[in-house]
Image (cartoon, rainbow, N blue to C red; front, side):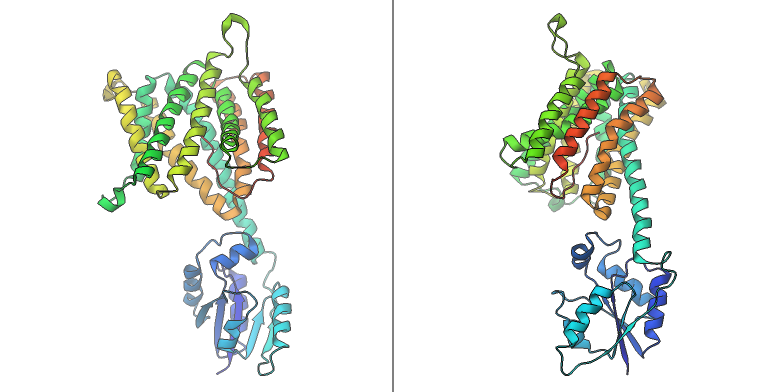
Length: 431
């Protein structure tokens, strides 16, 4: 029986793959596919495959063309799979030149094994190829990132609208209550709900700062401009977080980071619109937005500590549970359950802030970041302050101030300097 072997990732099978597999199968009696492991794909291409190894194998076998699928070698270049299977024919794709060179070099050192190597032609290369498919997927994920950033920016417009309809403790309670629902454990189980003392402590601190963030968020919006708040909080938050991490000794600052922090400090001062008259250093709305940025930064730090002891889903469940309980205590004097007093606009905006912002936008962001890489994805967070300014101008009629625009430019430049040499990582922009 003449055995033919092919190598590849085979992620999202397209006509080009099928054309290649059929041509390879025609050269023998049985076709064996060596499928790249998920880890190998990440090392070679710097991306996460759309489908897991098991799913890719299942898709290949389902075609009926491939009779057997095997994982690629743990150690690249060892060719252990060839030594074990010893196919008579090895088929390579038109773009597997590097693999072909390594394979031929290895075969020259083998005295008892000399398979036939066939280079198969492509099928409509510009349309059906892994590169073309990756480009199409990248466009999709870029679109998802823009959608995610737009939703996050709209949270400032939505928050401004709803802040005028009810006292902020009531707003916060309903936002946290609805945000909790997607993370409820079903069915409840003691092991799923258990918390270590450290996990409980860090999660409780995270919830406390999240609660105060929302207090300052809605209070600032009730007296200030949504666009301005969106710029101040979303640009100063990562700057404050970076400064806290450096002061805590968890990260050694680089020159570009120090310059970025200095520039960010200047941008922050401009954004806060300092005034010396009347014995008040900052405008009231600026002070609340600054406090919101500080609370979110501290929440981010404690969130990282909590997730060293607890998985993300359980962390989110307890975060919103603790925050909802704390906000309920604050809201009780205002009658949070007098539902007849709430308008349709109130519920629409609360649901938007809870589900679309807290759940959907964040999920879209991390989904896209996993596929195109955190560095590229994180660059899209720079859209949030700009979109917040634009959308508040279009929807609320808030004309951006020159100081806000100038401060935004300085702060965004600072964020670029801080992150341009940073290691690959994911971070969540606040909303």
